[in-house]
Each structure stands twice: as structure tokens, then as C-alpha cells.
Length: 586
Image (cartoon, rainbow, N blue to C red; front, side):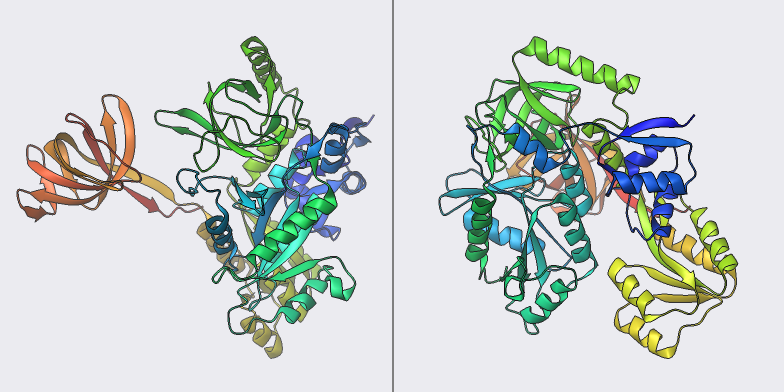
């Protein structure tokens, strides 16, 4: 009798493989064979999942979960009441590398950061809010498309609009296509920002033609895709872009309840010296206030400080507001949904139940938080995209099987396409779109194909010996391995005097009590057993003269570069070390 497994209408490839108890690479390979190019983070529908189970010959019967929560949009519509009020839109900015996404975000921040807020936008925040025309817009700064997919995965309508940044002088590129796919899967409105309009070669009509090839028809071509010319450099078109975001917001009638217990999503969390666990979150509904008890997975907090992402204190935060919270007892995880509960007793009970459910595996494959953790694990896997062509099917199968055997927990081969016969222009186009390397085994590539590959910067590699091909791929996978970070202790200096302190630098002196100091190097600053900060040692002095090193027993001066103001005290110590990245091998 077949085992019965219940799944939602949409399920990630990684989660489905986990439920079926098969390697995710096996499921991805079967999807590819059936013409579906999907990664571990992407979602497939129930019918596709059922077909894959049949193709794989598994003794499993899939059943559709009976749930009103069929999609993010459905969940939000069900969750809002007649008293729901308009809320700011949540906007994700996506695009190909070097097309100006960061510059555009910086231009928007510079022009629109709310007046009076202390400090600037740091490099580590995940969201921020601006004011435009008296209305607020929340920007979600997603470091990658996988993170965007993960945020969407928990089911809430947290991202409403995607601004797709495309360089008008360069056109659509692989990451642009990937961004379009993620935005479509999320079911959100796409606004195309044609950036770099100030550069020579910018051609917005060519861009519109390329967009039409990906079923994004502009309004003048009978579609509903909005394309706006902008320049992050000159800031031209940015007010119009923000106006369009607000217009789309009005059309979509984005609303949320405010008279309910606050809930939302943890989008980043870390530990800060002196503040403990700090969580960046996005409020989805309700009003979050200092002093409330918040539960996020197996962590809870009495909100001690509630701040905007630019550091200003908040008395309350409503829907679509990005916030920074302190007061957590333990660090919450990215992707955990948070909610306000009545008191500490309820908070403890909720976190204990979550911890027990996690320990017993009750939420395996079912909870949105667990799905996010699966996605986060999968994001640690680096993939080498390849296209394989061979002379006969037997050779093709042998090559692919041999390459799949190279997969590890950190790196893997992703066969984007494969086939029998010579390399064609279709292979080159697909390789260009997916960033793949084309491998030919006992086949040729005509001169016109080589020219096309050279023009599109596609690497074509031909082999007649299978082991040479495998060695080549092995070498490429090694390049994808994250280097090993090696720290080497050098010595210790005890502070005996502080001569100058600025926001980013300290000049001090002291005694070397252990080892040998050198510059440049790194150091951790300790006061007793507490680590205050990691700093850079940029210079040493022996008396009035510059020194290359200071050895045990010597007194000397030290120049430090600091990430923020560091007020040293007599008796503090520097533990000096070096850190280097060492290449690893498979």
C-alpha cells in the first residue's frame, strides 16, 4: 500500500524532496528531464509534484492539503477585515549585477530619508522606509533572489511590488531573467526601471523589445508592464518612479488591520555588544509597541527598544513598517514569524511548544519556518551551471552520471541542458542566459558557433577523453568552494595610555605582554572578559619612530582603525591576530 503524504498546492523543490526522502539533486534532475528548469528554492504546483512521484516510481501517494491558506494573497485577503486600513507598499528592488540596483537604492535613500532621523542607513539593514509626497514606501533590500523567494515562502503578502532594474545600455541579462521568474512566482506587480539613461548607447526601445520576449509587454504594446527611464547617477526619473509605486499601491488597494495583535516576519537577526540579540523585522499587521511581549519561533522578547532602521526611537510601528527590536532572550532566526502575546507566561508557553515541536519533528515539511530553514540550508550550496552535448546517448549518460558523482554538500553540478549532437546556437543562447559552461564530448562546434560563443562570452570546452572533462569540472567546482578562513594569533598589548580618539580611529600606547605585534593586522579589544570590538592595527611606533613590529616586553604606540567610536580605558587589552582566506580543494 502506497504511503500517503499531504502537501500544499505549491511546495518548494527542497521541501518536496525532504518529504519524499530522496536527494534534492535527484528530484531536480527529474524535473529537468521533463523540461522544467527549477532550483531547490523554487515552488512547483501539486500536479507537477504528482507527475514527478510517478516518473520516479516512488511508492507514494500525494494528497492535497485542505487549507484556506492557498497563497500569500489569499492569506492576506482572508486575514483582513472590513476595518482594514491602507498600508504602505513593500517594494523589492532586483536586477542583474552592475545594472545599478545599489546606486538606485542609494539615490532613493539620499533623496528621501525622513528628516530628523538620527544617523544614516547602515550596510546591514534588510529594510528601510522613505517618505514621498507625504506617503511612506518600504523598500526591502534583498541581497539575492533566493532571499526574496524565502521571504515570500512564509505565505504572507510582504512584498507587493518589484522594481526590476535594467541598464538601458546593456539590456536583459541572466539575473534579470531570474528576477522576472521570482517576481512572477510571487505574483507581484513588476515596474521596470530603465537605468543608466544618461550613458551613451542607452536604448529604451531595444529594452522594451527584450522585455516582450519574456512576456512583459509595455502599455503601448498592449500589455500592462510599466517601463520608466531613470538615472541613479543624475537622479532623473526617480520622483516619477516613486509616483508610479504609489499609483500601483492605490490600484492594488493594499490594506491591513491595525486593531489586532501585531504580527510579521523576522528578516535579519544578530548579536550586538551591549545590546544582546537584535532583530530586524517587518510588521505585517497590528501595531507593535515597546514593552509588548513578542514570540518568534522558539525565541521571545519583552520589546526593550523599538527603533526605525535608521536608529530613531519608535513609540509604535504599524503594517509594512521595518523595525529593529531588542529584548530577546535568545536569537530568533531569519524567516521566523513573530506575533504579540498577552504576557510573559504566554510567551514562555508558546516558545516551549515551538521548541518541543521542532525537537519531535512535528513541523517537518509542514511549517513555514521549517521551509525557510530548508531554503537557507540550500542557499549554502553553490552550483556550477553546465550544458553537456555528446556524440551518443550512452556517452551522454556516462558523462552526466560521472559529473553528478562530484556533488558535495557545498558544491554541485547543475545540468541546465543536455543532448546528443553538435553544439548549436540554441545551446549558446541558453548558456548565455543561465551563465553555464558548454561541454562537448566527442562532438564539434562549427566556426560560426564559436564566434557566437565568443561574442556572448560563453565558454565552450571540447573533450575526447571523459576523465579530462571530469577533471575540468572538478577544477571549476573547487573555484566555487568558499575559502577556509584561518586566524593566526600574534600577540597581546595592554593599554597604558590613550592619546587621540575619533569616530573611526584611536591612537594609544601600551606594553606588549605576549608574542609579537605587526602592522597591518587585526585585533580584538577586550575589557576584562568582554569583547568590545574588532579593529584594524594600521601602524606601530617604537618611541617617535615608525616600527614594523613590537616584541614581548616592549612599550610602543599603536594606531587603530575602528568601525565606530571606541572609548578605550587604561587596562584594556588588544589580542592581535591575522586572518587569511586559504583556498580549499574537493
